[in-house]
Amino acid sequence: MDNSPLQKARYAYTPKVPKILSRDVRKIGAKLGGETAAPSDQAELKDLFPKTYGMPSLEFVPGENPAAGERRAVGVILSGGPAAGGHNVIAGLFDGLKAGNRDSRLIGFLGGPSGILDDQSIEITAEIVERHRNTGGFDMIGSGRTKLGTEEQFKKAAAVCRKHGIGALVIIGGDDSNTNAAILAEYFRQTGEPVTVVGVPKTIDGDLKNEQIATSFGFDTATKTYAELIGNVERDANSSKKYWHFIKLMGRSASHIALECALLTRPNVAIISEEVERDQATLNQIAGDIAEVVAARAERGENFGVALIPEGLVEFIPEIKRLIAELNTLLAAHSAAFAGLAGPEEQRAWVAKSLTTESAKAFASLPATIQRQLLMDRDPHGNVQVSRIETEKLLSEMAEAKLAELEKAGRYNGKFSTLHHFFGYEGRCAFPSNFDADYCYALGCTAFLLIASGRSGYMSAIAHLDRPAGEWVPGGVPITMMMNLERRHGEMKPVIRKALVDLAGKPFAAFAASRKEWAVSTSYLFPGAIQYFGPAEVCDQPTMTLKLEHS
Image 1: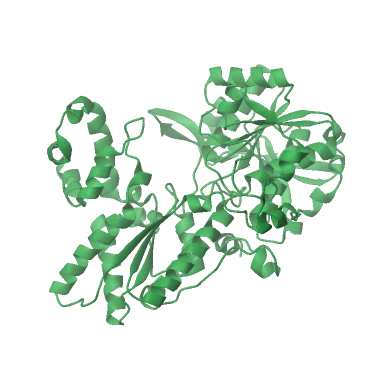
Image 2: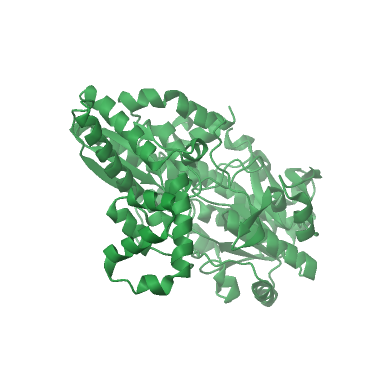
């Protein structure tokens, strides 16, 4: 297979690691903290996880751990959407495993969690690892979104582990995947299955973080990739001076990506979904605010601009959230009647009559294209597929209507030409930044140390990520201490709490302090492409979010 010059250079990159990880793995011990507790629902979670709740957090320090030298077989699963650095987690796990005992084996389950259920796997060899070091994607073994949540699935997983002599399983995934890892760890403990389960925090959305997990891997690379593209668009906008670019960014459940990209590029408009929900802002108000920015810039002769919009914005707008909930219920209850209607016009009329007055008004305010998306794009459970709603087009159309009103009132006399973009998949499989390459390798090495210490139900964790890599502190955190109970499919379920943008936090405060200036003046920053070679201040910087949170 031919390789690009960058591929060859990245294969040769040696990740920087915390000082402790440069030691012989048999000379690294665990320093235990006190008992841990979940942020809420402690009694209920203790009942659900009697074997793994309340375990101590830990960090790795110089010490003796002869068990690290034992011969063992470890399974690894990539779960959910790709995030840059996943291959380095596997590389770090592989290197730790082989450093302990060269005869140890790493088994990769193919296609995500379904791989262990269907017993589809390969042995990951040094040759395979060398072809994937410091590269993006999950193509080494593939990924999938199958849930590991039922006793039948757990029994299948246990049987496959016994068949291959696997004594530990590493699940690399987001909040749901790590929740499943915790449930599986508890099941194995209760049934006496001798399999240690360890999780690794992955998601580009940045919503798997808390006091113990500073950031999930992939977020750094994804936001740097999107910021490069946004900066390019800003430069183009400032060059041609005739387009408003509306850019939708990944991040359904939280706006961390939009906020980080705003801090990196200084767009004229950046909407933060959590602020919209806090202020109970309507769609009409959001469109009006955008129109005011467009008009203010037009007064300065600048009929161009850039607006950033989070993918999941509509679910944070109160009246649209209510509308979607009503539509889900309505179309599920009357699916046959709805399917029998003749064409979009009849469907829209039927829905408008069937909704409550408030939701019918919200539905009528939407452009016809968005109405069709709300009615036609359903997931297998009958719910609206929010990520497919072209929010960027919705807001530009509504802003255009607001500008027409301003023009009639004599408050706007400019030109409004729009272009639309969705930056999503472009960021998931990029070559990992040096930060993500280093971070993921350290997470993989740490996952092995957790296995060698027999710490089941833990998530691999690295502290002090705002510092140079040599000063990072590897350790482990019980997954149960990140959980709460939430209603899922009508039942209360244990889940890792998603981290939303903290509107009282330093990153949002830095954005809020400058956005009025960025709105009117052209203050664009151009981060450029991710740099892999050169001074640390160019190549090894963490995200602005991480630096501000720990400043």
